[in-house]
Structure formats: structure tokens, C-alpha cells
Image (tube, rainbow over all chains, first blue to last red; front, side, top):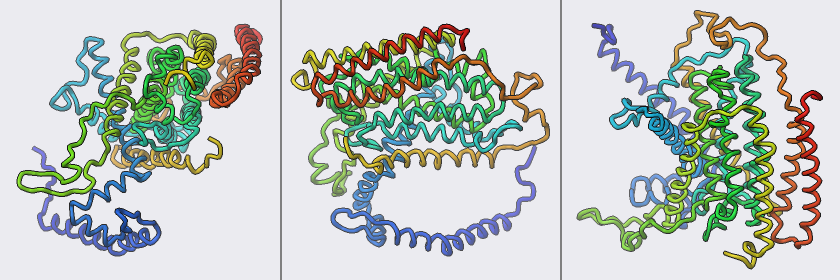
Length: 432
Length: 124
């Protein structure tokens, strides 16, 4: 029987603990507190409920639980919260992680397998966490002749570019990281970064399989960028706006997929190609070129690329929902908040706490988020489904599909939109 | 739409930076806790399915993609012109669509010729 720590002495253990406590106090006093003071001196504190939030006031509010809520609300209105948590990175990463798990289970069911089963008590629900721990504890092997700085940077840049894509997606009315008037063009600009990052990673690996896979990925993404851009033009013509929030808000009575199904189909197919998913997974063709441009990536670098891929998948599905399926619009299903909570407060048994501003989110926002997530999950399901159904297609079929058929259909879609507009069915004087 | 500040896009840059700041520590932590054994030089050779790798990793590679690249350069710019027209379509008079149709007709002709040429592999 092996002993974990054969030379264990309680006195030395306590001494090491006290050592750590001493150094923590020492560093906090000498560096931490002056740093906090300097930061407080520089940043502007917000005004909450008519009072300027001084550090003293913040401390008293933290001591009083009923007054934390205004601080939380003020924090939720900042850009930092939006970038880190709700419409931004945290929300997208959560949905991306769910997508990975659902994909594995669903593919397994399609192929009469079980899928992840043992990790976690219920249906392998902790499999993703286990995979993450495995990836982070594996050795990162870099080929000896690789360009190391670019090779290290490429996975991180891939995740960051996917996150920048997520920034444009409006989740609920007013809940969007970057509410810009040229949102759709910004999306195209960010999509243009992915081929560059891919080819940089592939070239810097200095190996043959990544090189072939990277070139294939570059050509595929470049080929399908034009039908992707053209297929969304019909919606822009009917809406008269490039702002994604306005495009989503314009579909309050009907989604654009009702009038522009051709554009939606073209966009869906180009989406599959941009995401390198089956039947367009030539850059990662396992049976031909090992893993394509991911061949030399190992350990956490591979994990980061996977995370970036699924963030991108979420962002594309969300873009489809915003442009064609009506975004957050849907019938109100969230029950209205009871009036006594808004006015009086909550009763927890004998205690009645009067908490001002309790519902952190409005009813509209909860309802919008619910519909948005439902639609996005539906679109993600249809993106995942071909992987269990279709074989991979050849390169020349891919090129002829992208350059002749899809571009032609995208122009058909534009003429349909133009006809609807000039026949007076839609636009000013028409429906809506 | 006119006169939008570049500063409005700062949140996109912030999101990009947050992606880097949140994900780079994963690589650093992985480097810290994972084993690093430099015992075997074969381990650091490029992957070639178990064969001893031969030749350069970065070779000249004939893809015959030039016609498509040329078409991409033309059509990407054309698509952005179409967006400038399409987003203002509700405000301009209907007669202004005719020049755009002429433009599209010219582009269709050019594209048909380019696709025909791309089929003739010998010339590339």
C-alpha cells in the first residue's frame, strides 16, 4: 500500500499554512490595497438611485442585502457584463457546450449507439467536464519545425474571432453587445477572419496534412462567402436596414422565411460549408487527411479550436434566427410578475422583505430570450442532423455547387424580394 | 445610418480581447500542469501516419483555383455595392433600379465567361 505523503508532519503542515497566510496578508497590504485605491481614484463610479456610488456606500450596501440589487442592476447595464456574461461570451459558451453534448448523444442515437454514458449519474451528463479536464492535463506537442508564436496564437485567435462574431447577435430587445447600424457588414467582416486564421495555423505547423487541410478550408470558405453575403441581401432590401436588432424587430408579424425561403435555404447550405460540417467537411476529412488543419494541434490547443468552432456554430445559427426566423419575436408565454412583488416585496414565511427593483429582468426580455433560445436550438438541431445522414462530397462538386447553383439561387432570391417590394406586397403600403 | 462613430464598434473589439484574455490562461495552465517529456525526438516530427516524414512540410501544391480567386475578388466587391443599393432601396425612386439591373446584367455576362474559362483546365 502506497502512502501519499510518507514524511508528513503536522507541525510543518501548520507552519506552511501560516507561511501562506503571512505572504497573502503581506502582498495584499503592500500591493493590493494601494492598487484598489489607485483604481478607485481613476475610474468613474456610477450614480445609483440618485446617489454617487462611493466605496464607503458600496461597502454599506453589501452589508445590507436588500440594497445589493441596485448595484447588481447597475452592473448588469454595463458593457463588461454584456461582454462577459449574458448576450456575450458566457451565454454563448454555455449554449456551445450544450451543443457538443447534444451532438454526441444525438449522433449516437441516430447510429444505434449509446454515446456518452458513464460519466455523471445521468446519461453521461458530465462527459464534457471530463473531456475538458483530460484536454487541459494533456501534453501539448508542437512539431519541431513549426513557427511557434503563430502556432500558439492561432487557437486563441480562433476563439476570439468567434467571440467577436457573437458580439453582433441580439438576443432580446436591447440585449446585444454591439448595437451598431452596420451590424450585418460587421458580421461579414468578422467571418472574413476565419480563413486567415485557419491558413495561418495550417502554414505555421510545417506539416503536410495541416497544409492540405488548411488550403481546402481556405478555398471552401472563400467560395461560399459570396453566396452567404448575397443570400442575406433580400432581407436587407425589404427591411431597409443593416442593423441586426432592427431586422429582428421588423419581423414582429411574420418571419422573413415565409417570403424568402430560397434565401433561407441558400444561407443554410453556405452556413454548413462555412462551419466545415458534413457534407462539406473536406478540410477535416478524417478518412483522407487525418484531421485536416487540426492534425498537429494537441491537448488544450485542440480543445480551444473545438470551443471556437462551436461558438461559431452558435453564432451562425443565431444569425439565421435573427435574419430569417424572427429573432426574439413570439407570443408572450412568460407569466406576468405578481403585482405585490413589484410593490410590497417578497414574503418568506413570517419574514417580509421589501426589496426595491426585484425582478432583475423584464418580462419582455425573459420572453424574448426564451423564444430566441428555442429557435436557435432548433436551427442547431438541423445543422447537426446532416452529420448522421449524409456522406462527404467531392471538391469539384463543392465548387460547382457554390459557384454556379448557390450564387444563381441567391440572385433568384434577390429578384423575389425586388418583385415583392415593387408589387406592393411588402414594404411601405404593403403588409405590416 | 450616416455618421456612425467608429467608437460604437469598441464593444466588438472588447469581445475579441475578452476572448483572448479568457482563453490564453487555459493554454498557460495546461502548460503548467501537463507533463513535458523531451525524451524522444521522434515525438516532435510532423505527423505522417507513422511513416518517417520526408521532404518539406510546405510544398508547392497545385490547386488550380486561380479563376475562382479572380471571380472572388470581383464578386465580393460587387456584393458590397449591392448592399449599398439594397439598404437604401426603400428611399430611392424606382427608376434608380434600372442602372442596377444593367450592372447585374454585365456582371452575369462576366461571371458566365469566367465559369466557362474555369472549366478549361489546360490554360491555368
